[in-house]
Length: 440
Image 1 (spheres, rainbow, N blue to C red):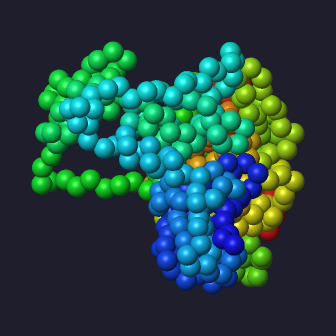
Image 2 (image 1 turned 180 degrees about the horizontal axis):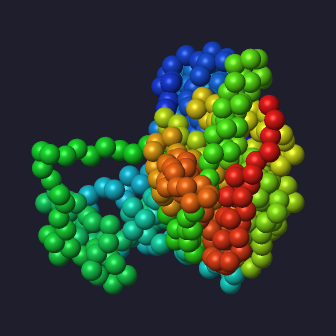
């Protein structure tokens, strides 16, 4: 009997995954433990091992497809066995082929639209970043699409179904495009942005030998969608200040010396700043929150998110219960989650934006003096840490000299925080940095 290969679930918050690469093709002999394909969650990559032996009878999805977790991805069985009983996407594929086929003169009819979903008043639209990108790229609305993912979430497959059953170009425009080879633009000038035949001759595309078009990775698509969603759905404002970094640099020097003498952790400037941020959050709990639209969830513990640059893109893993750690424990956990991200084996649960209560993004090592970090919703704030620069300052008794200062940039959601409490919180971070009292 043929066996289905199921898309694994990686954590309770992961509702769909993206197939990044297939390592086996249809007809290949499969042994138990063979790597069938690699897949990505929001920001982590994994590989799926076969639990069965036999022949790969059919692959139901292609590289780049978004698949709902626990859904059949491929079929493994004996030669000649039928895989139709598990083929839950064949009808979608057929519909897409029909929708993409050139329209002949005799076929100039409007494709019957699938009955739209009447969304109840107040029901929030849940849609995956990949599904949103797909809908925007082909120019169809997803507000009237019923999601088939967990909890009614709209996934890319739902967008493909809608695209196959709806027409966003007139029959004449399709016919002209088939005859002339013209590309159909995403939106047109007709009713409801429908593409007309005239739109085919007004749409232009840049061309030339001085550029090349490169496909962006699934990771980049997810990051782009999240950043756009954050800026589009919140009222973000950034305050900038700087803290006297002399105490910070003194502690870093002592920590380095202690590490060279056998201390367990090589505590960095970033570790010290994060430690100061945690102390400030305990004094300003309204910055340690999630904004939920009509309510605010205030956390009693600090779950710190740390922006990590990896080869695959930006990741923000969470250090849970960071407020209960001393500086050595915090340093160890920050390095651990960062390394897991770079290796690609971080727990997806720690990458969810609602896993952290506050995030820190440090660009100081790149020499950045000032920047505006973007909030990871539903968090209400994020701290950007800048490079240390020497500035003239009054040293007392009429003496002036150069003092190292570290730049701090706090972006906050004005829907949840007003300017005064946000400024007070930023000032508290500065004071904590300037007055850190630690021994190594």
